[in-house]
Amino acid sequence: NKSIGSIMSTPVVTSKWAGTFDCGTCRRKRLMGEEFSKKALERHRKNDSAPLKCKKCVTATEQAERDRAATRRKDDLHNNGTTGDVETRKCIGKCTRVLSKSAFNRNQWSKGDGKSRCRECVEQSLREESAEQTKSKDDKLIAARKKVEDSKRNGNAHVIVAAESELAALEAERVTGLTPVKLSAGRGRGRGRRCG
Image (cartoon, rainbow, N blue to C red):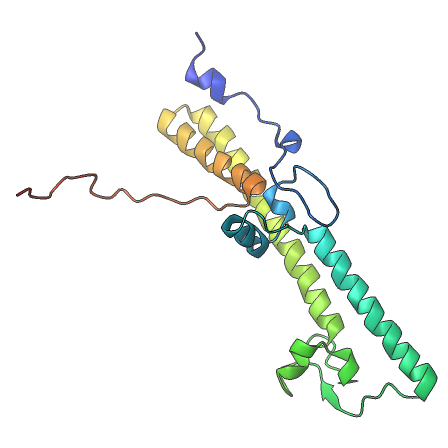
C-alpha cells in the first residue's frame, strides 16, 4: 500500500505530455494549449467544428502577407519610379522615424498622427511581448517546482498539497490553455437559509 507522500513525490515529465488540439493549417496533431492563442482556444471551445490555427501558422501567414506587401511596393517603385505614397507620418515606436504610408499597416495608419507605429516597431514589440510571456510562464513553473521541493523538506502536509496543487495548475494550463479558477469558500449548499 503506497503512501500519499510516495505517490506525490513521483516526478512528472511534462515534456512528454500531449494535448488534444490539432492545427487545421499545418495538420500537426495532439498539440498543447500553449501552441494556440487564447482567443483561438476560446473560439474553438464555443464551436468545436471551427478549425484551430497554431501560433507558428499564424506567424507564417503574417510573414507571407508582409512579404507580398513588400514585393508590391518594390514593383510599384520599379514600374512607376514611386511607391505611390505622398503622405508621411512620424512613428511613435522605438524608431521615431518619419515614414511613408506604406511603412504602416492599415490599423496603425487609421489611428492618426501621433498615435501610429510602423510595421517594424509593431513586429518588434510583438516579438518582445511573446518572449516576455514565455519567460514569465517558465519562471512561474520554476518557482512552483522550487516551492514543492522546499515544502517537502519542511514536511508539513498542508503546505506540500498546496504547493503540488499550484504546480499542477500551472502544468495543466500549459497543456489545456485554460487558466485555473480559484473557487471561493462560499457558505455552502443550503446553510444559513430558512426553509418554509
